[in-house]
Amino acid sequence: MAALAVVSATGLIVDDRVLVGSPIWLKPLKFSVSFAAYGLTLAWMLSRRAAPSRVGQWAAHTAVVAGAIEMAIITGQTVRGRRSHFNIETPLDQGLFVAMGLTIVALWASTFVIALLLFRARLGDRATTWAIRLGLLIALAGLLLGGLMVLPTPAQQAAGDLATTVGAHSVGVPDGGPAMPLTGWNTTGGDLRIPHFFGMHALQALPLFLYAIEALAGRFTRLRSAEVRLRLVWVAAGCTTALLALVTWQALRGQALVHPDAATLAALAAIAVATAAGTYAALRGRPAPAQSPTPAQELPA
Image 1 (tube, one colour):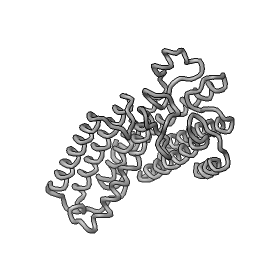
Image 2 (cartoon, one colour):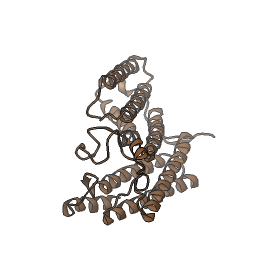
Image 3 (spheres, helix red, strand yellow):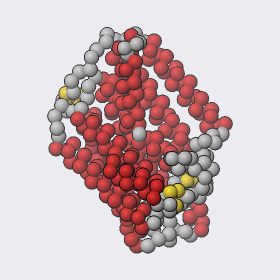
């Protein structure tokens, strides 16, 4: 995936083709970077277990193969100048799109198996263990939300356009309109890629949040308590889940991320207040004695 990211970045420079309003090599670049981060994170999480597992190895290999097949299809369609997602115009396009759907099912199933394994293992201290577990759960939800994009849109159903295209990234507006730099997210309507992205990358966000807390523990005595770190992880997971629900609701209403209405802003303010209150309670609670992280060990079934 790292090598493909370099190839895709080169494609952005030397290939000036545009597809559905975006540079044609932008999608393979974004997907390769995302898959690289996803694979590295899952590998790190599995390495926290005390002993290797055949089931874990099988699930990891499944995720790798699924990601490789999906990227081969995306890159192949890019070379052909064709859409990889939602394209059923020809039998070949339709077959490739169906194959991509199957790879995502395999990726979700393998991630679910890995999550089950990690819920049975001690992966360090309690804060680390729960940062990994909760990040996986939110990522699984984010993957599932991607399924909303393959449903026929009302416009497609009304126009009988299902012969060439099924599903879309955008809600309320056609794909390919004005978009945010780099991400390509729609700025005039809802975009279902936002909750999909936000949920998937909780996989990295929660462990990184915990690392930030641990880095600050040298300056703030209260953060040296394992109990305080655990409570802060739970608050961060709750905030992430609430934000995932908010951006999903916003997208489904056909509202652009950068143009929130009063209801969205009110919900965001409520999340901010709840998170601030939770953080205050987590820091003010009586901390347990400071503990160093414990070695990863398998919990009894």
